[in-house]
Length: 188
Image (cartoon, rainbow, N blue to C red):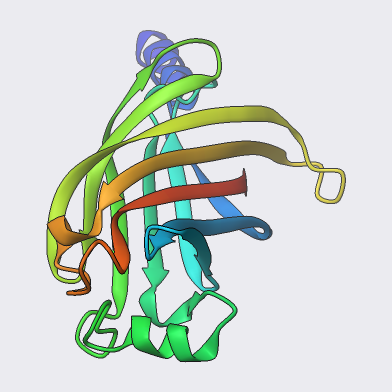
């Protein structure tokens, strides 16, 4: 009986050490944005006002993290109502037919102490393709409000909107390449 109890205690301790911890985005300290070139002359910035994001990891350095993000495509905001309505229409995002943009990571490769390459499946406009993005771990600490662990991340990268069937405007009018940037704090 004592052997079983000792074995059980070791098994429980091992499970606790390698337990998956889920972290949820703190929306008050997070933003998902993009930049696109307009008429080969200027850049237009936008963001999405509504999204959910989480990460799950069993390691302190997050080198096995799985990131999951769901964006409400209808929450696109470029500070121009006419342009936002066009982006929501079937000319671009077609939010009535494709209401969500999702990303789920499939691998993460640590480059150095705070830099990673995160690869995952991005689904937008009904098309799913693998993308690789640059991920920076800004830091880890404890929230001054909740006293619980908190971690900050920044993600950057580019994608081609045509690969996802988003928009029919020629590149001379709306650039094909979209620059992505997201910042966020995650807490337990």
